[in-house]
Length: 409
Image (cartoon, rainbow, N blue to C red; front, side, top):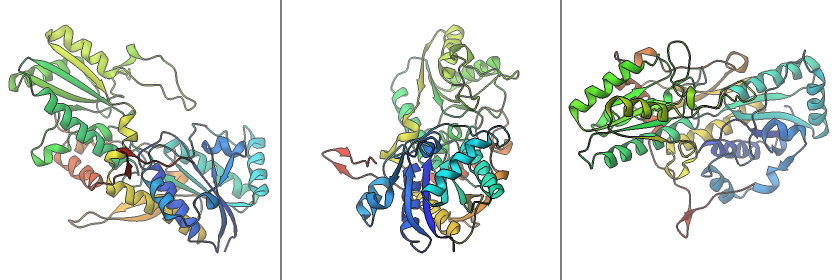
């Protein structure tokens, strides 16, 4: 049994479920006093750790069940987040020496990092260095991303709630657009740089004969302007109100983003371009071709912070995976990312497992080709059947005076 303190942080883009995972880690730590004496939270991820900006989560939450429950239903990252790319040991060994000195100062023996692909890179590098320098530290990656693009795991915490928001809003948009008989096109832009899972979720209504977009375009297939315009023309033959869902990251065969003309060209620390303007670019294209009424809608931040419409399945699983990360670490597991394995059978359920984080970091899980229709402008029912169980159930925050109650650390 390794006995010491633990630290947990959140990194990357926030979600409606990332605090539920944090709540799971807190619950797990409180349940393992045999291994973990104090659980610290690092503000703004690894950057906060470097500043020694830590908060004692034991003293904040203790055995106060109501606070932990409120945290579960609070959107965004309660500890704050960051986007910091760690150097390699060869490039900056002093950076890692400073980290180890901080761990020693606070007797940190457990490190939990809740994040997506880039965060798993941090977990892998820190795991490698702690082993090489002989400091006993159990390092665990706990998945989080609305993009659902982490490999190995069946899906990621946060995706189900974002998918539920998108599918619901899409039905509402389609109902709104259907009230007029004047020909019109509405183009809805949804997050997704390389993987189109979120945009695919816009279509799950098709499983039940409910509203779904006329077309769905994902970054997994090359976009073609002429084919797109031909699709719009076919839709007009069916009805006057055309609604289309597009991923922000759709690109042409040469790799150029469809929305490139509306983008700043700026990139983040990981080299990712800041994407925006895809729907607006297509709006101009449709207007020039058909001269009809066209509007573009960018769902933007609400799709990842909609706690008022979170999926109960997603919130419950997020708590479960955070708690499990603590338990397996206390039992001796390190250098792993927690994963979901979907169980066989007609009734949906998952088993929480873990996998070597070094084999997960810096990879992207794309929507498989068999989930995309032959025309490359929609998704199959099998794709919707994969996503739909992740959106099931309602998990509402507590409301006071008509407004939701959120917890601020």
